[in-house]
Structure formats: C-alpha cells, structure tokens
Image (cartoon, rainbow, N blue to C red; front, side, top):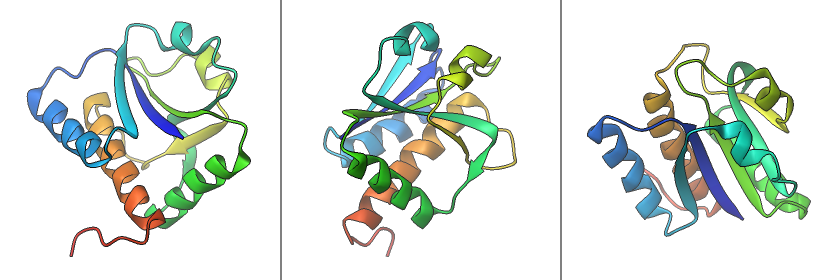
Length: 138
C-alpha cells in the first residue's frame, strides 16, 4: 500500500525537507510527501484512500501501536493508499477532519507543521522497520 503525507503548504526550511527526503529514500518509493495548496480539494474524490488526520485531540500511539495500526489498515484490503494529512498554519478544516478515518495525535505538544512532517516520516520509517522485523537504530 502506498503511503502519502499531504502537507497543506510548503516545507520552507531545507533541513526539514532534507530530513523528510532521507526517510522517503530509505522507504524505496513506498512513502511520498506531497505539498498541496488545498488538502480538501485533493482528497474529495479519494474513496479508496484511508485518511488519517493529525490532530492534537486524536489518539496517541506508541511506535509499536502505530506500526500495528498501519498493518491493520493494510489488512483491510479495501484501501489502495494511506494518506496522512497535516494542516498548514491554520490546521485542518472541519470538513477535512470530518472525512478522517482515524484521528491521530503524535503528542499533546503542538508542532510546527514542518516539524510534524519530519517526525511523521521518521515514525513511518520506524513502523516499516518494526513490521519487517528489522533493526532500526542499533
């Protein structure tokens, strides 16, 4: 299953872009980062996409639970892609939040959307390693 991170806006700082790109590269094309001007427009016809919104009020998971959640979504067999949505400076609209299949919180802390992209790409890579029984950082 293809995994995409949709960011409303742009990754302006090169160090965030470079970090996110490194994890994308390690995933060999299984992870894609898309910078879009309007998330709602992008997802309105995505019927076979499992939509995860990043929201501070969402469910928090540890890394193993996060990996298992990705596996659970893959095992459903209905979805052809997994979309993680990160809002811009104003967050996600209520319409987008209502389209969510799963509301996810990485922390009770608030991150810049650029930081959230980097943290999320790393956690998706970590989940990939966990699910493939591969060592990560040792």
